[in-house]
Image 1 (cartoon, helix red, strand yellow):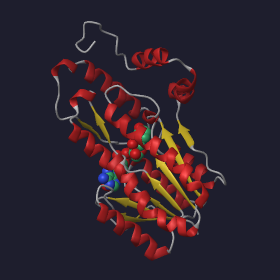
Image 2 (cartoon, rainbow, N blue to C red):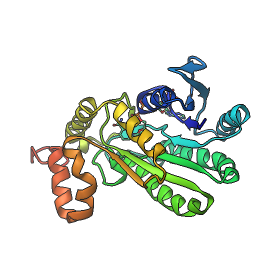
Image 3 (cartoon, protein in one colour):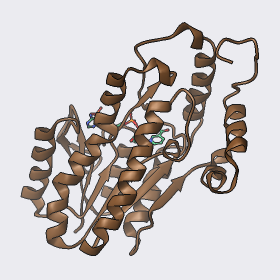
Length: 272
Ligand SMILES: NC(=O)c1ccc[n+]([C@@H]2O[C@H](COP(=O)([O-])OP(=O)(O)OC[C@H]3O[C@@H](n4cnc5c(N)ncnc54)[C@H](OP(=O)(O)O)[C@@H]3O)[C@@H](O)[C@H]2O)c1
């Protein structure tokens, strides 16, 4: 039976995915920083904070001790950071990267020796459409996902000869309670437009498809004999984003993004 370790399975996409994979008969280990129980929806729930190397080592070792192998690692744990890029200190950005990017490196490095020994494995990293395009007032989050894209694409080259696959799942806005921590150095000049763009982000997440849609894409990827590099999960106008990025000139993409976030609605607004 395949053993799957998925980080951040207490809520949202991670919970939906761990639940679906357990229903499909996989042996699933999910994680939470503060697990409320040892099992949830048919999977085992372990304590893990991806920012903490000791916690990562302990979590991976627990799974290895119980099953002897990890066939699939799904790096899902993450959160967001909202506000103008200028409003984020380097420390704010570092905090976000500790989870969204360095957490992935910690988990991957802890699992890889076991996958290399088995000469097989699959690593699925949960990226975002914000890993393909810049997003106003989510700039640091977008940076963390762009970093994840570059890392995962390079990793895929390096691991192929070890029989290990690497895939990226790129959801658009998904209906979860994802936490977008506000930047802690607000700059008054962004007042008004910051709130307007953030309201669009919030509405997009509220009206997005349920996390089960991402879970089904992840199941599809892990059942594929040759998993692709990218799996995009979108609906509505987001559907065209990956094509738009490939086919349209930068100026037109910029125009479309500004329009979709109503950035030019009131030219007298501060921040224009
Ligand atoms: N929702 C969207 O619109 C969307 C779109 C694109 C990509 N994504 C990506 O999808 C992934 C999941 O997001 P979501 O929307 O499902 O968010 P969510 O509902 O807030 O779930 C986030 C999960 O991450 C865990 N987590 C947070 N910080 C952690 C840490 N330091 N160590 C270990 N676990 C941690 C949380 O567990 P505990 O709090 O229990 O520790 C929780 O289970 C993220 O990588 C996110 O960037 C989301």
